[in-house]
Length: 173
Image: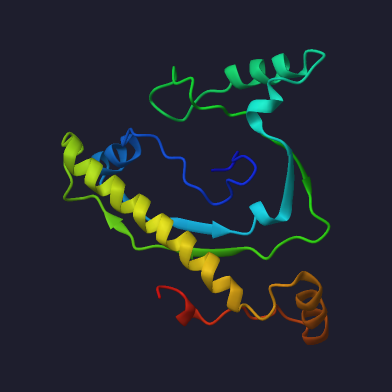
């Protein structure tokens, strides 16, 4: 989701493999989804990742070579669908406020890491919880009285502390 393209902010691009859930289950780890909104609203994408590869004067080839030398965190390192070339971005004049919400934790201690169906079910649950968190924040931030950068900065300077955000009750509606 970090290297999303234009008009793809807050979309989930999860692979079909459920490997991270299988690893978590293998070690009885708890999975805690973290939804974050704000970063994509703080920058303008000038050139999307795939378009970076088409840059002239060898720049596109250089970007591709840098990507091919990166080690993938996923088990299937031969996956050519995953492109880890950052887009060309410029920051906006005023940064957006960032919002974070932790989702429901998922206990994996009762999941057999070898049971691919059980891992797939848990994977879907984690993905749905993350999506719900993103959707909740996107809606709730509209009720933030200080989401505007100038207004928030002014009130923080006057009060000497961070400006409040939307009421917590706005989440999980």
